[in-house]
Length: 385
Image (cartoon, rainbow, N blue to C red; front, side, top):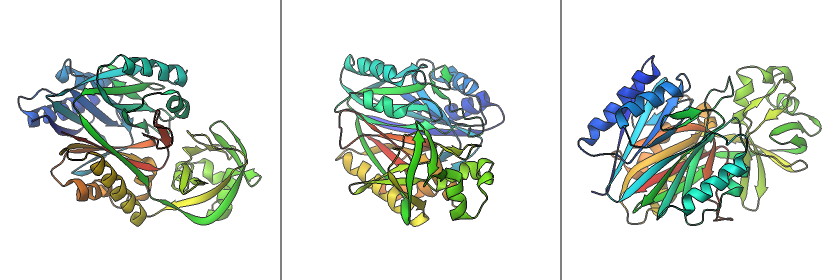
């Protein structure tokens, strides 16, 4: 045995107690084996301080990382008001947790510090990243990372869409505006796949005004007015629940060769502009995209097959599933749909831990030395012997 994994999930009013129960479940499944890494997801109802204290009290010196999310995914389906703890055991690999609270203040400096840590690490194999999905510049971070030949994947915390806070954790450290990372080294195999299930409906806009992460106008009108004309709701209604967050169901896509660059609103602001967490170029043309269950199913299969093929002859032992929050909105009537499709490729006996994110971090084919940030995708990261 070189790699195995176990998952625990608990639901309760108290974050610390739920974290204790979830960690205890996972440890019991491992028996006498000692984990090298814990991955922790907690739904938005819990404070991460209590969750971290609960996990840490049982794991001791074992490093763990994670984030806050709107909902959890496991082989048992969709979970709300819960804590999930996944534990990895390996006889040939090691892991360390990295905490960087200054990510929102300087993503570039954070990337430089990560570069330095990886450079002085013997035999680094994979880097798992979690960042705040509401603050910080994930594109700047990805562009400043210079980590060739390292498998990198991660997600942006979906946290609490009402308070716009997306906390992450690393060991007993936790908070918003931060970055947490797990650096794995030694003899470890990973496979990463990603895809999205959103397609054009033929409607095209011109991005007439944008600045930073704010999309101000489409075709010369406030973005909410452009959507109001299409969907029949008054422009002012898009600034209030549920439409202010439902706008993520209808992202914009810019064609780049044969690929579509997807940009998704986090929410609609009171002035009718769209708040994003990835930049969108002023003056560019954008297609309105919509998702479907069939297209998402195909995207899940594609991403799972990519990850499985990347493992080569390695036996899958654990699958990490990071899904955009838009999928949660689209597939609400089919809870756990994402896991069931992934199981078609990896089987029902493989532990699968999943969470919803406001963005995804994946390897870049165009620039192998640093990763890229995405919206609206599903990421499948498989760990194998």
